[in-house]
Image (cartoon, rainbow over all chains, first blue to last red; front, side, top):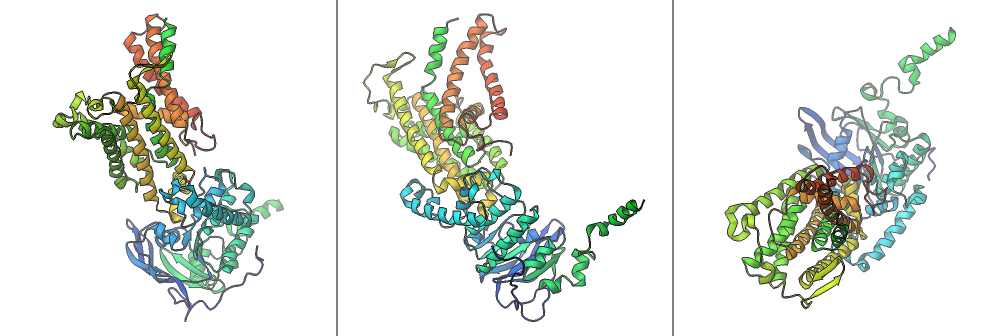
Amino acid sequence: MSNSDSPQKSTGLHIGEAGPGCKKTDPMLIIDHVKKSFGGLTAVDVEHLEIPKNAITALIGPNGAGKTTLFNLLTGFDTPDTGEWEFLGTSLSGVPSYKVAQMGQVRTFQLTKALSLLTVLDNMKLGAKNQVGESIFRALFPRSWRKQDAEIEIKAIELLKRFKLDTKQADFAASLSGGQRKLLEMARALMTDPVLVMLDEPMAGVNPALTQSLLGHVLDLKKEGMTVLFVEHDMHMVRHIADWVVVMAEGKVVAEGPPETVMNEQAVIDAYLGAHQDTDLGVVTGRISIIDQEKDK
Amino acid sequence: MDWGTIINNTLAGLLTPTTIAFALAALGLAMHFGFAGLLNFGIAGFMAIGAYGYAISVLTFGFPWWGGMIVGIIGSILFAILLGVPTLRLRGDYLAIVTIAAAEIVRLLFLTTAFTDVTGSADGLFGYNNSGGFTSANPFPPGSYGWGPWTYNSETLWVLTFGLGVLAVCVWFLWALMRSPWGRVIKGIREDEEAIRALGKNVFAYKLQALIIGGIFGGMGGIIYAAFANVSPGVYVTSITFFIWTSLLLGGAATIWGPVIGAVIFWTLQAFLSNILPELALAGILPVSGTQAATLRFVLVGIGLMLLVIYRPQGIFGDKRELTFVK
């Protein structure tokens, strides 16, 4: 695991002034005029957005800002009303989600999707791409897939070791804890050899000790040459590992830039972070003064 | 009470062409529901199409018996595609609604007098086993075979042998598929199809393949049933679908042998109840008439099915961890 104290930040990602829709030196995803409404509600309305390659980009914003919807649109799980977007120069509009995944853009889900009644190892093996034995005709002839399956198993066990799940490989995924399922989902996503990993709230519901190791894993992805785009509400994590931050509110991109600058912008603080982001929760809610008063009595 | 006859009839239920036909249909449901998670409530429709496909192509188009059986299988494949293409992109519940309706449409089409020349309407079809050459393909010389309750004439023995052969091939086929990476994807789809889609698998194609494979098994079940009895629209009613569901859940939905053993247990139990209940009524132990007693067994089947899904949802052979209804 990497040393999570001082992760190496990528810089020089953008061209010109950092602001909503600014150009990137080496973009992986380019989004143009993507709009999605649910009835009268405009969930996503992104004019222009570029996601830098080989960097960790955080997507933040208040609840209902359209972060997850944007995720669904980009991965083909939902179709936008208008707009187009490119992934490594290929247009992805109208491409079904499984093809998007085959192109190397893998995602995880906000509500973890572990395949409960499959073993942890089978969960992992499902992630591997281009499996011969997944064709119904070749499936009947084990000779055609056995060797590949053994190779996939070795790779899966290696990844499980990295994520400290190797002792659980024979257990059903249903027996894992919530945090372990998050790890499994991330490990399974890596089995697809992705170039872009999209994580939807990887830290939600994970205990502080596990957060540390998850952070390490995310940083490792960048080290291995992958690009990461993640949605997160944990601002400490965002500040710590993100190279670039995109802030959304009411479906629009309202700010973007390196974390240090963006998270100090007044618009962002007003819209999302709140004025008291670094103060103790007890002070914010006014409970501390009450407790102090009670103590004085 | 004549215990000798009751026991004899019950034991005979262990191995009959009907048992084999229902084991095949339950195997098809195991593919659909147990492994792929597709809620198919129209398995009777698949059986009807297999049976009518066989009988009609022999009687109306003069096909040989094996040609007719192939037509029956192709018919069930087409039925699976017809059902699957519009519904598999939707949530699973929709498939359940569509299949139950489609099976009824199929039955009513065979029942209507509009096509009496071809379908025989309410009378059904018969004589195709003779004219198609299935009976004369019998390798067993006439005579009596077997022992005790399992005494068969050569015709029944031929259907049994043929049926067991087909069942063995289908069991092997399902086993070979489910141990492969293809089977892993299918089980993954049962658990969460969005997760599988996110891993780059064409979920729709896999679901359609599973629907077709299970549909073939169901069609084969109908063909074996037709090879023994006449084809009659009164057989392929919705309650048959629920008998097959009971057999499947009894044995264990996500197992290979569960549906087969489940069908055997179910039909043996049916044979037992249909013999003992009228006897009990006759002896005055049950306060109902003989005919009421015979229908009472279906009430008991319903109660049995409820108890089964409440207290042992994984069936007899299922791993307690593998398939539970409550997630």
